[in-house]
Amino acid sequence: MIKTFFVLFLCVTTLTSFSQPLRLGIAGLTHGHVGWAFESAKKGDIEIVGIAEPDRAVAQRYATQYGFPKSKIYSSLHEMLEATRPTAVAAFGSILAHRDVVRACAPRGIHVMVEKPLAISADHASEMVRLAQQYGIVLMTNYETTWYPTNHLAFQWIKDNKIGTIRKIVVHDGHEGPKEIGVQEEFLAWLTDPEQNGGGAVIDFGCYGANLALWLMNGRLPDQVTAVTQTMKPEIYPRVDDEATIILTYPGTQVIIQASWNWPYGRKDIEIYGTHGYVFAENRHHLRYRFGDQPERQFQADERESPYNDPFLYFAALIAGEVKADNNDLSSAANNLNVLKILDAARESARTGKSVSLSKVN
Figure 1: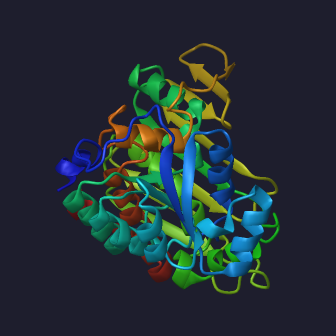
Figure 2 (figure 1 turned 135 degrees about the vertical axis):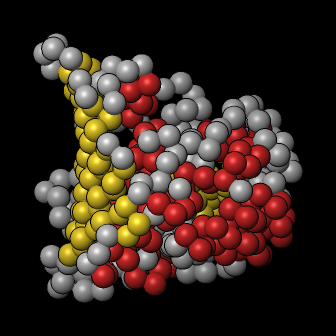
C-alpha cells in the first residue's frame, strides 16, 4: 500500500485554484500553534470559513484576539462542516482527535492537515491513511522544521555527495518545558495527558527527529529502535515523560534523537555526519559545515520560494495540483505513518528496557 500513497496528492475530489485563498475550516483551538492559521488568514493566504471548538471560553478568547466572527464558530466539527462546506480542514486539537477529524472529513471529500505527529499511534495513522486513499483526499502533516531552508540545503548537499555516506545523525528538539514557557492552559492540559498526547517529550519532540531521519534515509525504517524516557520534573509532569532519547539503528548509520522538555533554551537543530564531512543545521537559517579537508565554514540560508516556505500555502498548492509530492516528502502520509511506527517502538522500548526490531516491517 505504501507504493500507492502518492495518489493522495494526484487524485483529489476537489481542485482549487491556487490563486484563490484556500477555504479552510479549523478543527479545534486547543493547540497553541493555531495562531499560525489566524496570521495566515490576515495575510490573505487562506480564508477561515468556520471553526469547531466546544470550549466556549477558548473560542471567545480567540474570537476577541483575532476579530473572528462568533457566528462562524460551531460547537462541533459536524456542525461546522455542514454549515460551511470547507475545501479543507486544519486540525488544532489533541493528537488523539486527529483520527476523528479524518473520519469526519474524508467521506465528504475534505482535505486534512494535522499538526505533528500524524496520529497517536500507528494503528490510528494506518486508518487515517486508508481513509485518505479511499476518498482521494490530501492528508498532510505539518512540522515547523519542514519549512527550514537549512534542512533542505543540507539534504541537497547530501544528495550531491558533499559529505559522503551518512554515518550518524543527531537531532535535538525541545525547550524548557511547556509549562515553563507558558503555553495556554488548554494546550498544557492535553500535552501532559498520556491518553490525549500519547506521551510527553517522546511524542511532542521525538516525532521531529523520526520525520527528518526517515527523509534523510530515503524513507527506510530503521532495523531497530532503542529508547530511554525519564521524568525529571515529576512535580510538574507526573503523568508523562519530559526527557527522551531514541536511537535508530540502520546498517552503517546511527540516528540519535534527543527530545526534551529540559533544555535551557528552545532548539530545533540537526547534525549530519558523513564519511568525509558534516553539516549542522543549527536553526531555520544558519548552517555550519565541513567538506573533506576544508576548514569549517558557515552559511546563512535564504527562505525557500513560495509555497515551499509555508504550510498553508503548500497545503493549498497540493490540493490545487500546483505541486506534487512523493512518498519521501516530509509532509507525506507514507513518511508520517512510519514516524508513528518508530514512536510506537520507542515507547515499547522505554517500557520494557529492550530494543525493538522493525526489520520485519521494512
